[in-house]
Image 1 (tube, rainbow, N blue to C red):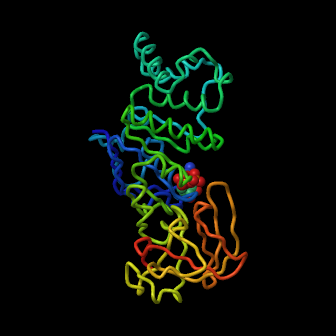
Image 2: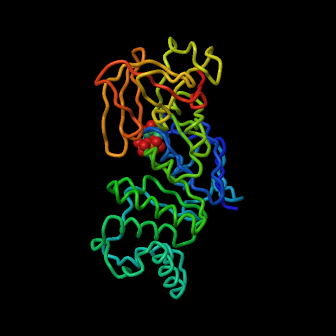
Image 3: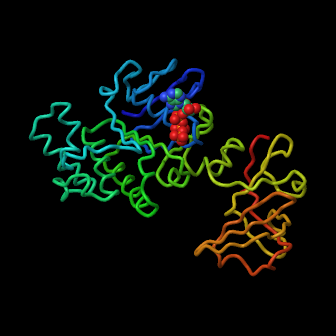
Length: 336
Ligand code: ATP
């Protein structure tokens, strides 16, 4: 077992409380995405697990081993950070083998591990190149190979793809997921890209101001956010104005709750769909963006957004009255 257990961790920097009594489990072999706004404590949590920060309180286990007192290099973790630095004067193979040499692994085994790992990240043919002779995506693979070559129990990734452009980034996401599955390594991944977290993770944790707000599978966190912050942070939420609640089929009592609908749960038309929840609004703008289109609608003074395939949106009056409808089960309820 090499999951990671974090229990009641508190970390302060001077007067700033970066982690406030954080408890969270990272399951063995899972891909866990840590999300949260800037300054919410994501990097601090990762670096505390790695051993770069010592928390004031709390416990950390890697597998069944308590590691609070264990230095970084003995925690058996691999790391890849946004500003990963490869050694420019070393070949790809030497960069990848660095951690093996530090651990005094015998030369024959070092060569075998380097070759295996380079194959895994599909850089088999590039062992003798220097980092300057590689593309951005290839360099990223070298950094990943270097992080996993020692067979660590846990892989910690802090925004590893954020320096890449969009299309390369999507390729690398698929690649990262494949490699993680192949070797079955427990992975904790920090990002502030919601879509990236949803794509890669089998569990997501949302942090806000040093506290864990919600943990769960991506679908569950997206469909059943625990509060208004989680609802708005992981995706967009159209909040239903209180004055519109009468007559709607709601999942909870209007006393003590707020309600929202995701942009893609909405349909738009020129008449209400009486079999579903429906609200009247004023079409402000329709934006065509290739496969998908976005409509901005004003509902009782609130700005709403609908996202749908362009061909699923009927012809609408240029600006004016429209009806929005959605299935009652798509209404999100959170505590007011
Ligand atoms: P970002 O998405 O911007 O990287 P984050 O969620 O990773 O943010 P952290 O870097 O963990 O957030 O920072 C959490 C809080 O701790 C912030 O208020 C930050 O200013 C503070 N902090 C982090 N590192 C230090 C440090 N070395 N010294 C002092 N304060 C720090």
